[in-house]
Image (tube, rainbow over all chains, first blue to last red; front, side, top):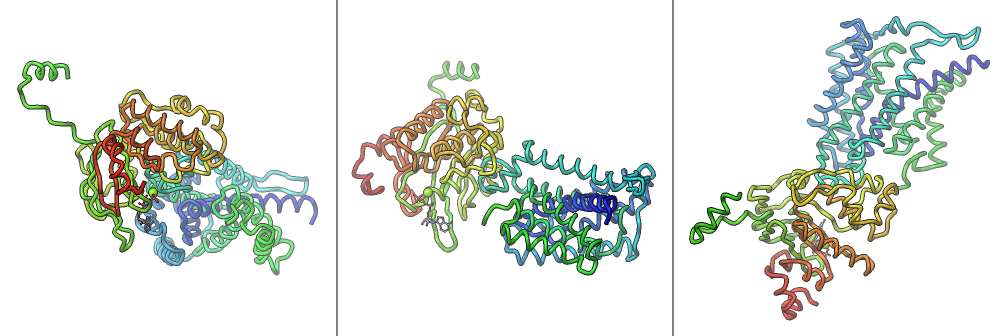
Length: 289
Length: 255
Ligand SMILES: Nc1ncnc2c1ncn2[C@@H]1O[C@H](COP(=O)(O)OP(=O)(O)OP(=O)(O)O)[C@@H](O)[C@H]1O
Ligand SMILES: [Mg+2]
């Protein structure tokens, strides 16, 4: 692999890492704060991709599709938290896994009912459809750079929300001590609904901006879910910083694995996870148990 | 207001005005842990600005009473009234927003928040009592917290954590403060500081329910006292009366 090809793969890996971070951060927040294992998280990524496909078809504009889609997903998140996830707090993990697995089946069926089982593609918006020259030999698509840029902004926004706003402070307090937070007058139920909706919106957003890069197809959330879980474990459960580090590791390792060792590519990320866990059993940024 | 007073002044023989409803009233409160009947019919009245010492030997139900009053432990039977209106079965955050705040056993400091964030996290305007509690006033009350605003809440000594827990509760501008184990495990000098703060709050018109093992101090500080024995009220009356009755103290508290 020459330097230019290496650079292309590195950029691909980083870009995939950013997308994975958006998905994994929602998963790790919901687990870290509410203690719920949400297997349906990948399905929200898929619904996001389908919404991008459908709404871009309707409006002819990916940006508009993303704005409408994110709002719709946030509402879906609120509804699902109120109707289902809210009953899982303080339940054991088996019940959580059963219910959220059931949610996957429901969301998959809904997807098939509405959009069928065909593969679809979403066109890259005209404005972003060009390429930039990395070297004299090597071009790189603008849209992929754009995705990385947008993900950086969203990630920074999320860190700022959690670290520096009153809302983020309250979410952290509720995560640390739910009873104490409520005894001080914080509506913990509403905070949790908000966190869940935020996670759904982030996963869906990732699915939407990823749609023009790959295909939109049934079950596309499953692979993402597994990657996201690997990332959460690598980063340390509940740590958003850890999710970021884990997502970058997995994004880059997965991308290079597919190019360098295509026969065993699917195992590369598990090897990375095993290596990290041998070194730090609680994950990169996890609190020791 | 003035008009009422003048009317009263002119008709001294008229009926007395109806007494204000208690800030908080509990009637026939029961609570269970599984099959364990921990509170067996508690009646409490706390008038605005009044302080109540809630006493009893270990495991008699003091913490459970406090938790039931703020809604953390739902009562299995009985009613809670705040300002004469039913607050029975309300979730804790609704009761808190009616003007009740908790300083729990073990302090309950948010370990992942800084001292300043702990103070701000639930800050609310509110009670309309005296002047409002804000960061400046809380830091004036607890100067030691001012030096530690940016450190994590748990990197504090026990005394500082208790100050933070009280300051955090005051930032919600409560009318009623529930203090469970107000000075437990603190150095004598720090205890003195906490008691003096409690007296300041009292002077400002904040009502308090205080659980503490320091009988002399708590009785000297409070207006009234209640003693729990196995989940029932074995005494309820003036704190001074209990302070004077060593035999009663021995019988109900074993001191
Ligand atoms: N979470 C719980 N589960 C089961 N039983 C409990 C629980 N909490 C308290 N109890 C029991 O309820 C009774 C009353 O406990 P509570 O904590 O209210 O007493 P207390 O008066 O605050 O005691 P202490 O002085 O030790 O703080 C005790 O017998 C205790 O063992
Ligand atoms: Mg207790």
